[in-house]
Length: 334
Image (cartoon, rainbow, N blue to C red; front, side, top):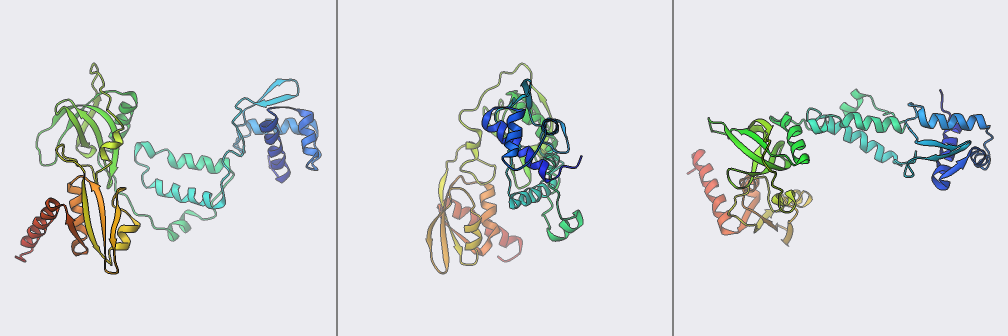
């Protein structure tokens, strides 16, 4: 049926009465409409209640129940048809987010998101003004490549939720042999379009990070008692850029000196949550980080070539110098 403006006003009046008074009668709803200069009959109010409950085109699915003749209430006291009071800007942001998430629709945890967002649009009677073609002409998203091993996210996520130990067959890069590993899974982490599993290794007797793109198979290790992690799994990566942490290292204060040209990029997109400005002049900026040494940190530094200098610690500075010297030899500079 066509839901004109007056009908939508009546739905809001009914919703307000059910929210404010908890229990209302047909007569009270008629009077509430009259207070808004809307003349209605008992039959119209009953039809409105029915539509709010059952009309799928409205999308309310209102949990209205009759407790005695001509008396109604919400069975869920927290329910409201206005539960999602979104502005036009917020709605446009949802459309944008939906398009962004569509790039990752092949990933199991995200494959239902575009449909879920569309349900929100339907619920609020929202329709986009732009066609698919117009949208693609106005916005160009970065295309995320399909990542190997993402089909293991679902079983691993299930094992983490259920606190189940898993057996994984793992094959490291540059290793021709496959290895069986018994792992107590704690956390799935994404870094630079690759997914990793943090878990306790029965073989190594310590926390270990496994790349999903190197996992051959996953199955539940029945009969093995699950070993809970001490603290929050995310804390493992707190003082780390990347996913590689060596067991014998501790976070160190890193001092990096950036040129004037590179400074705005580093300040507007911090390298780590611990980043602080130590000194800033018209020609350079020095920042500090409290992180572990890691291959990923070194690669970050090398990517800025002559736009950055490592001031401290000396061990990291020397590592970068050796890498630069090695690169110079490759290109026949020295």
